[in-house]
Amino acid sequence: NAGVTQTPKFQVLKTGQSMTLQCAQDMNHEYMSWYRQDPGMGLRLIHYSVGAGITDQGEVPNGYNVSRSTTEDFPLRLLSAAPSQTSVYFCASSSKGTGGGSPLHFGNGTRLTVT
Amino acid sequence: AQSVTQPDIHITVSEGASLELRCNYSYGATPYLFWYVQSPGQGLQLLLKYFSGDTLVQGIKGFEAEFKRSQSSFNLRKPSVHWSDAAEYFCSGSSNTGKLIFGQGTTLQVKP
Image 1 (cartoon, chains in turn purple, orange):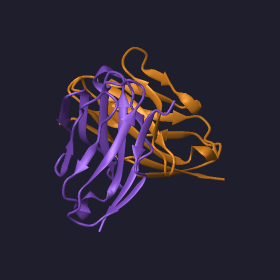
Image 2 (cartoon, rainbow over the protein chains, first blue to last red):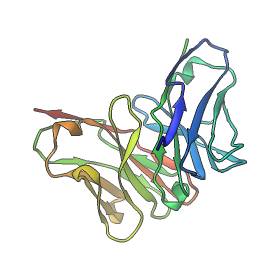
Image 3 (spheres, each protein chain N blue to C red):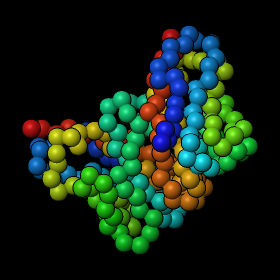
Image 4 (cartoon, each protein chain N blue to C red):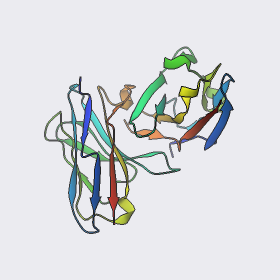
């Protein structure tokens, strides 16, 4: 099983550029989410989705957009990258959503640097 | 506001010694609680979870955690640490809103 697949693994952007981080899961999970991980701050929730067509904001949504057109895919878009968005990004999914007590399955992360 | 706090940023233990990593939560009702482990350059792997019932839960790799409502804690323990346990450990909690919140993480170093 592939599980949760994130691409790319590494990315360097210049300030103001846009890009999309891809996330796909093959477990038919309803719930998907994006986190960013920064030293000393743990993982912070950016956006999440409880099913196709439904998205909601997490703790740090500013500067990021998401959409959920299919159950499998949950891309994260940076419309105008800023140095403050330099981070490691993780996509995660679960069958019922953590509100239903289901644990998250994580991708291996995307390391993004904005210069 | 809902929160999860890990008071210890970095812990060093000797191989074979016991381990306890602290986690405190702040939720209106009993949350779902999880411990994850992250090895360098990897995603997070679930160690164990608590939903309800028995307050002592067993996980993978010999880890266990105890839920204490009176102390709002969910500490992770292991009787004898192995060098391969060196990693970063995250406590997390979720209410029925579906948002999973993580603590700041504790980095475990194991001395030979």
